[in-house]
Image 1 (cartoon, rainbow, N blue to C red):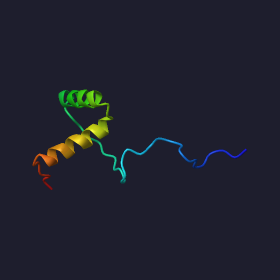
Image 2: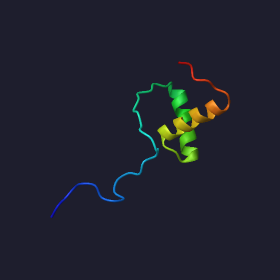
Image 3: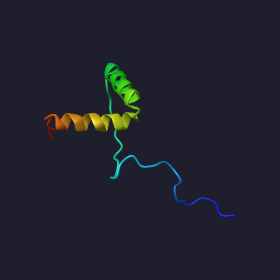
Image 4: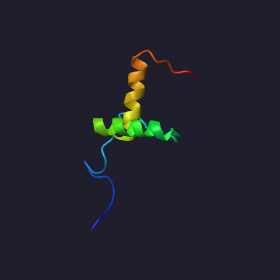
Length: 66
């Protein structure tokens, strides 16, 4: 019997429709607690909560400094 390989509908569903870049992010514990509280209240993963908060900040006139 053949095993392995791609199967339709198998595996975790993608959260995003674009490539994802992994990063290491250091935060103060107090900020991390706030982030986790927000994510829990909204039923989000921690990375999804960060993405939503960044998007909200940008929509409110925040500017990325490069």
